[in-house]
Length: 84
Image 1 (tube, helix red, strand yellow):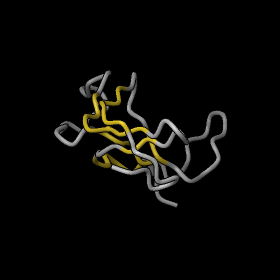
Image 2: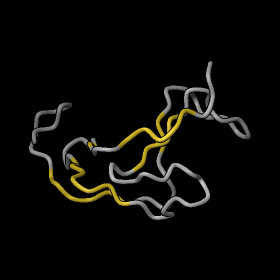
Image 3: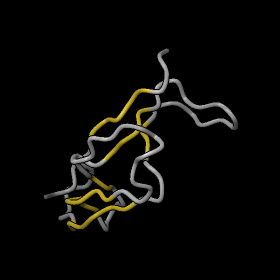
């Protein structure tokens, strides 16, 4: 796959995290979670309970661009923490 940002060839691998990554468009602030926070989980993860999730999830088929640092990976949106 070519990088959608710079057009260079991307390298395929797996992304691992210690905790689930999340997506937001808001600025992060101490002691206040963003209202549009969406947690991202592996595609094959059927368990949405925060207490029983894998603490070291793997995101296979991740691709990274060594030129600009963009990472692309397939995932599913687990939950939306709060509504605006």
